[in-house]
Length: 124
Image 1 (cartoon, rainbow, N blue to C red):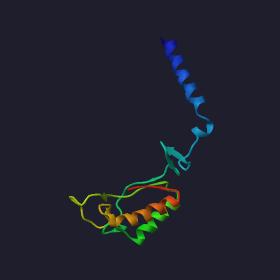
Image 2 (cartoon, rainbow, N blue to C red):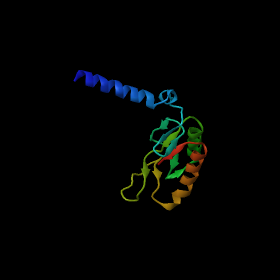
Image 3 (tube, rainbow, N blue to C red):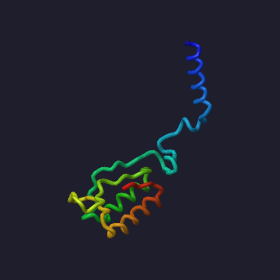
Image 4 (tube, one colour):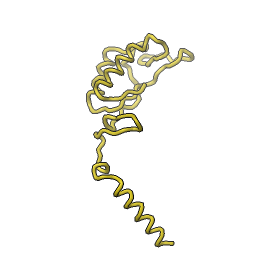
């Protein structure tokens, strides 16, 4: 039984070793990769943290500059902060993202296009 276990361990180790090339086992966080079919510029993410660059649900110029700077630098995927998606039971506050009305779509499209142009992904 011990010989069988040893054989299985060696077989699995060799399978793993020969399945991946040297390049695949020595990747860094700056290397391009895929998450299923989603291409990621790198493995650096900007978390969904509080953001005061939105005023009354609309993106300010300060906000566009912030997201442009993040996407031009080494941030590969950006998660925006808390977003209101329904006019039911809203939380009011400065810096709250809103996608509950069509009037916000044009600015978000501009933001998304800018981030994508710089090679990054964005999730709202």
